[in-house]
Length: 275
Image (cartoon, rainbow, N blue to C red; front, top):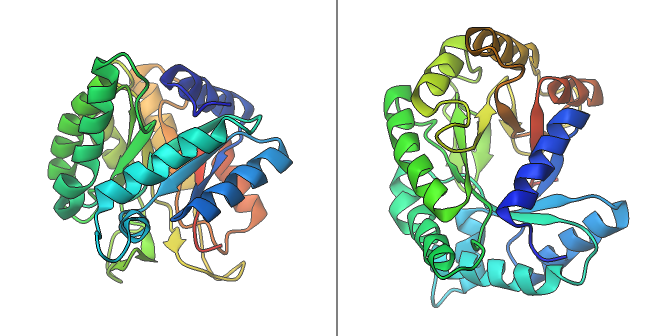
């Protein structure tokens, strides 16, 4: 099938939340890994998400070019061409993008999709992640507000992170003293700043002890109840059941019971990279 339209992607996320399951979001950095992900989705008869980190995108552009935007655009265009041959829905997403990378990665990609939409075409990507976990929450959400407005123009969905996922990804390592658990206050501030869908749709990577990297089961201690606490508190204030569409980062080493519990609390996307 063609890469998911904005409407199809929204329906995918709604279906996941209602059915208490999450789509695998596979990090790819080449045409071969895109094909492998598509084949895996098709063989499992599962819709899914293909995503590119800024490092993976830069790698895809080659050592001479070394352009995150050129690499991401090339990978996305390849996926658009090849996905038509597979009988599943696939969305395209860009992974973690910190403040210092925005101007060289997510913002130009949003502009590309805005130009495509203005020309009557579908956006190049279906969603992008803004990772403001390294800065104060107020600034994180201020930038998220601006990016959400740009996402609406591009007909894309924004993913944000509140709290910090531990470990290392794309050469970026969370500090050992970083806050690895999101709070109810974080959730309240997010809903106040971004609304709950009326300003534009977004996904929330709330943290509950998850860590990037490869770990054996039992070596990572998760507290999925953190997600439930946030959903219930924000939901009670705004009269909405499970108001956030949640994302599970750093799932390596997680027990199946922990994954299932997180799904019960509204996780609709689960990242898969080092595994």
